[in-house]
Length: 118
Image (cartoon, rainbow, N blue to C red):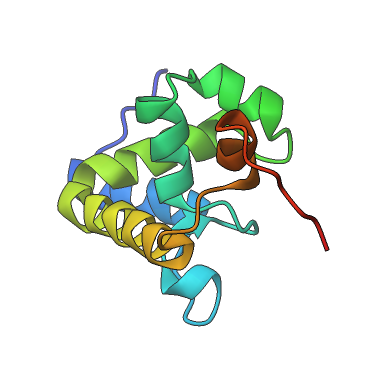
């Protein structure tokens, strides 16, 4: 006899996602991350959406996480899209602020500037 499971879809999915996604103050800035890892949901999103990596490619490059972890991260992202996008944007703004008006060494070399290394 086949058992049919009765569950509330949103509650069931939250339980499944919570097995794969952790939010811990003091770890990764309290941002959602793959459970047991320092790979943030926003990292998965960037790799998948901006870099065009498939979930299989992501786990190829990060073999310590599972395909279920990647899909849970993408599901979490779609449930919290605005929050994750704001985190990505804040990280990009911070990186630009740190860089300031200082071009990278590669940019200087490409411009033909003499680069002095310490």
